[in-house]
Image 1: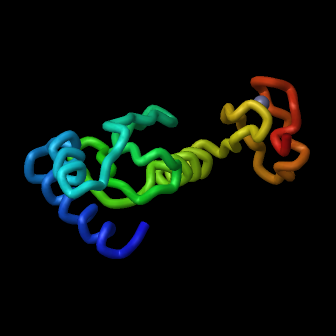
Image 2 (image 1 turned 45 degrees about the horizontal axis):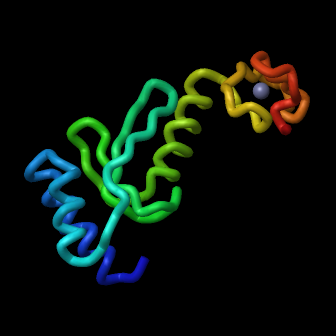
Image 3 (image 1 turned 60 degrees about the horizontal axis):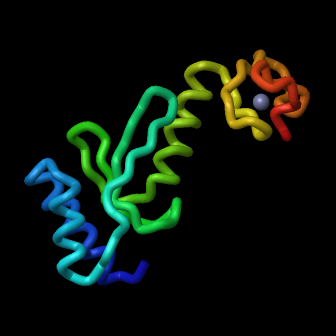
Length: 123
Ligand SMILES: [Zn+2]
């Protein structure tokens, strides 16, 4: 995404924050010719966020979690939430099925077997 678009995303974020509505922000961007696919939501590890969908996982966009709005990508948010969850729970995400499985301390993750699918988490 080019620089002037980032500035417009920042303006859109302010609008979203002021109106508490991602829809308003999407409408603002739409009026400027930055057309989205609408508002989407994603949930991971009991957390949910919404974002203005521009199609790609790592597109910069306006994101919302609760009453917090920021410019970033939903892909980065998912990674961050997953990492926090893994750190807190001592878990690892299975590269085979995508579920979280406990990782025993001192165990090399490459030898960790997923409790959901029975494959090595390395896939
Ligand atoms: Zn698995």
